[in-house]
Image 1 (cartoon, rainbow, N blue to C red):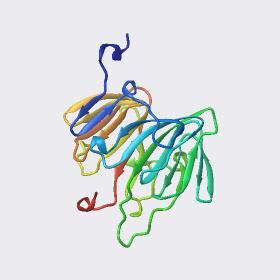
Image 2 (image 1 turned 180 degrees about the vertical axis):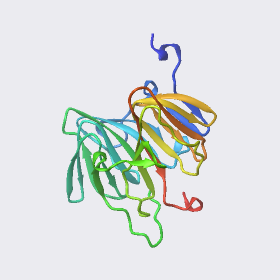
Image 3 (image 1 turned 45 degrees about the vertical axis):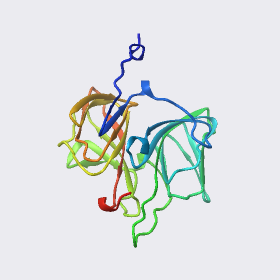
Length: 249
């Protein structure tokens, strides 16, 4: 008998965090989606200042319009991007950043695809140029050790430029690697486990997490992660960035 038949799940909701496991995902089409459904993980209804969802595409599937700037990272299959005068095919690990107001379509011409979508109303910064359309692949970015630890590699998917008001990274932990400290900070996070698993501390609780789990962390939520098992653990993580906390909407 599976857990949900007994009313059990690893999912947990607290004031400063959410662990959402795939057995509790609910899928529905967002406005103007075609042959596509979304599981919304984080949104203003949760207390988040951004929206993050996983989109599932069928053949001919297409995203609806963006609410603010949009970041898309392909998890499975391939997606076709048309933005301004540019066209690209994004495979697994391919991604794009679309500045707020960019006219674009993102569609699936294959049998199926799945992608992470992050959207946030853009917060401009005086005397700073607007961010640019970006199309890239995670594999093209060399990992950097976190705080000198070669067992923990970070890939920054967006430029560290003040034009961008959020950051998205992938973080890969070798088996047994962990963060060197419990972090407590003003940024909030949206996190999707891509590979492997481990233990995540959120607030005063410790949770086993694995591929497919989503985590939202509110500002100042105590957080720590350690990888367990025989394979690396990896996740994609969002944070608000490059803006003064007193000016954030």
